[in-house]
Image (cartoon, rainbow, N blue to C red; front, side, top):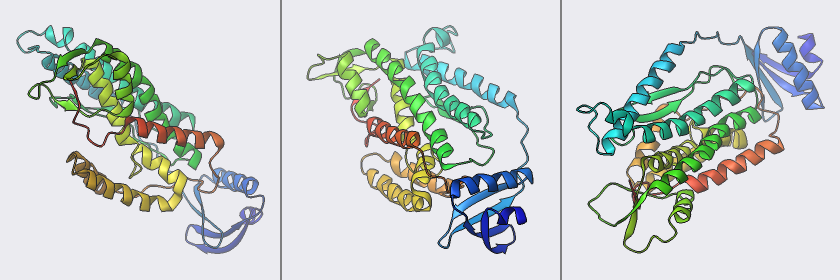
Length: 342
């Protein structure tokens, strides 16, 4: 306790929670306190209170055993389901002609794996670089007739050290996924074919701003009464943009929720409810939005705090926050189903 009192005026101790005020300069004494707890084999959460500061400490969670075979198996199955969907949606019959699975299915499968995989690998690499324990991506193979997958995710297995790390881990996935989805989408759009509009043909897809801009560049002379029959790579890119927008919603433990917590702190939960209400209202345009709102509420709106909730964000973090907002504007579409066809 003497070591702690050198850096903090201790006013109360309740169990494993210490309240008081960290001496000025706060950054230097905060760093010293972190080292004291680290040498004692504890992890400590530092937060601001109405009266000053509080520290809650405990033993670090045990490291979980990694089962890489699960990641590999799910990845292989996802390649299979996306090949199957890609083949069938191009008119193939892989059950009768097995080669159709690869000859017709690979453009969609490769494209969607690239977009989803880059998103999750960016989270993984950034987390590990910042000292956060995280798993390799878990892909979700689902024989959905449009996608063949429900995406991918990583699991964070240790506390995030700072608000800065929270922003960087949260933004890295959408940012890299967005940068990969752009060339995938544009190449796919170049390979897409203009067709006469036929309400009975295909499924109409809403067009986020960035996808609309790319389609205008790829097909600048698309006249009235014409539409695009999207190439599988273009559809995969569209899906990647849609998933990016979903992940950037500032609610729950989505990527946007991480960023919003880092920016707004405990006020973040009020923003979450505002966004959930907005999603419910958007249900007048697409019923999927209320579904997502209910799903996030069921999964929980609580967000675990970083170990250091005191140190403010850096300039680079604020630039990443601005990039996340810009990407959200470019990828979000209120009506995901409504204009483009594949």
